[in-house]
Image (tube, rainbow, N blue to C red; front, side, top):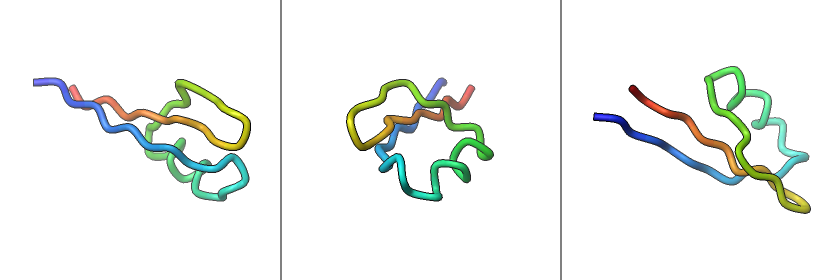
Length: 41
């Protein structure tokens, strides 16, 4: 089974860097936040 986790994080939040290091990818961008996803295989 494939699973996907998504989250929204403000662009100014230092956690963006942590999520990228964990394997999350930015899939959408709005004025103040990123939508990020992590896909499990």
